[in-house]
Length: 329
Image (cartoon, rainbow, N blue to C red; front, side, top):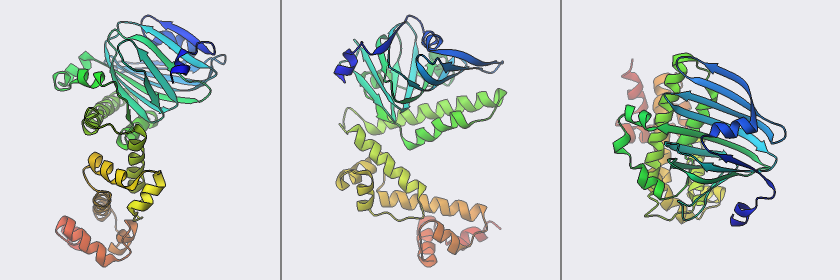
């Protein structure tokens, strides 16, 4: 990484004194703009001489949400020397980014599926976005006025978090929220309410994830955490399957004992307990909202025997599936 950081021959270099707008105005051409009383939206297309792709920006209540999706021909090195004062949430969904500053003992490397919280106040340093590969980033800048509006300024110790100089993997919960930013088709006040709610949800989960990771106490490999998240996603997306820990360990390439320990530390339950919880919650939803038979629901969540499912459901909820459904009639 140090060799790449010092290579200034095969890259584009930009100097920024005020904001990211300067970078975007150089890299891209504005193609679309919407302004209303609720939010501002701007879409820019990357100029061919730099690469291809687009940059979308939303602004509401001084909150800036920027979605970058592009592939640059060369590495882009941005020298920052500004007095912005934001709490910034950065999510590198795909690609690679290196942050260097005299304020950090070491460079911060953000790779695919990494996230980071930083205070941008008086940031002086460089950010390098690696070219020749797809880069997707979602960045959210939160001003103190927004935090104060929601009464959370004094409750979150951002200084302590930032001083750890640690990136953390994007958890599955965070990833699903990030997808919502691009899939939403709302407009006007509905769009503004939606965006604000999702930003707060991201902030809440990000803070909780930092607490769970406890980087000062645990020195866990980032790759291992990502593999634990991959296991959680496998379990959640395949409730009809009953995985053995050994199979999950082989699936993600993580030592079985490490997987057991880290999964329980992050999710507060063993993989078996977590899987059962999700299965029972899914069964509850199906009983409440469908006319599927107990046998069909049993099969949908991985119980091949309806009797075993009924027993497990009763142990979890205190009543059989039929008793649960009948009391709703």
